[in-house]
Amino acid sequence: MDKSSAKPPLRIGRLSRETGVSIRSIRHYDAHGLLNSSRSENGYRAFSVIAITQVKQIQRLIGSGFNLDEISTFPECMKLKEGAAFCPQTIAIQRERLAKIEGRIADLQAIRKELLGSIQASELNGPFQALSVTRGTKAEV
Image (tube, rainbow, N blue to C red):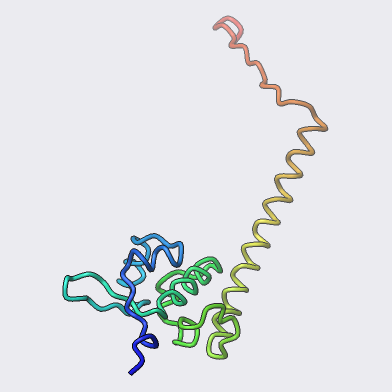
């Protein structure tokens, strides 16, 4: 019997070090059902080695603009394989995310255009001068 082929479970601190993700975030992912953990006899969370890949994939998906609730609805092929960009079941989800991002880009470009126009108008007209208003006396009214 080869004991070297069986990988011992990871404790949360080691999973954090291996992935560069905080313990707090790992607990949060676990609470959302994105990771499978068990409890050891002493009560510590124990994760399989695949959790390293899962945490890295979760981070990548978050970086792509997905939130944990959205990620929790993804099929296993998307959550279990790091870099799973072409999981057939998620193409529609990825296209929706892309459309939202492109919409945000269009909104930002419109804001940029407006701001550039404002800056150019300010530069052409010089600095803003507040109008001085003098109040008249009763005799002038």
